[in-house]
Length: 228
Ligand SMILES: [Fe+2]
Image (tube, rainbow, N blue to C red; front, top):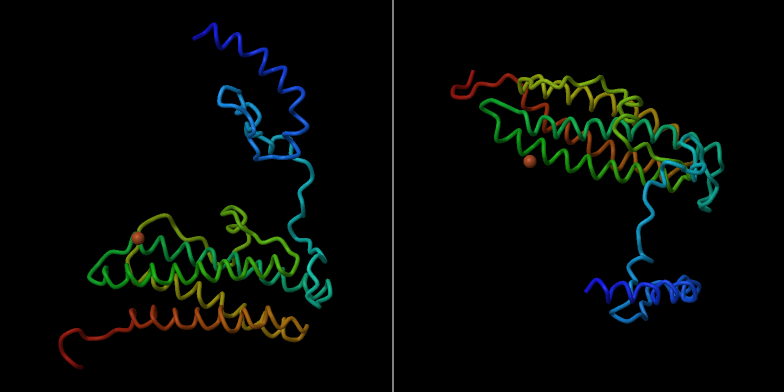
């Protein structure tokens, strides 16, 4: 076995030299017999981040790539506002999942399901905001450490908290987000960025207001067995 492999090695090395340019041109066309060592040509090139060239685009800049009929100052202003909304929406989304896992008490089942439903809805919003930022030529904030720095929602403790405290934190987060939404929607409207205005009004405000309603009704003092 070993001797046949040794004998085949020089042949494979020699054919690699001459076959290399053709292989580059037609990637994916194997064209080699079962006995050849073709796998050496498809090794992944790892650790490229260690010597990364300049990034494709720096965070905080906007490119003019897509012809969407909006000038650069307008797109820059919208991207800045949307990144703020994105950081807060990611934070709210993750707070819902935290509370989904950690909720405790007689309302466990309802809140457990409700929090996960709202998490899923916030995840949809996260994607819509991030993709709007990319369409505008910006760079969407994405990673947890960057989100934590940018978010306007106060840091949530790692501890497990009582359900009413969880609900109050969520309502505070929603309110901060919604206040920004109203402000940013009118600013986007003033500048003629209808797409951003529509995203904020039709998706963000509508969804967050609905979630506020569903969550708020859980912390209304209400008798369980006798009308008062
Ligand atoms: Fe779950």
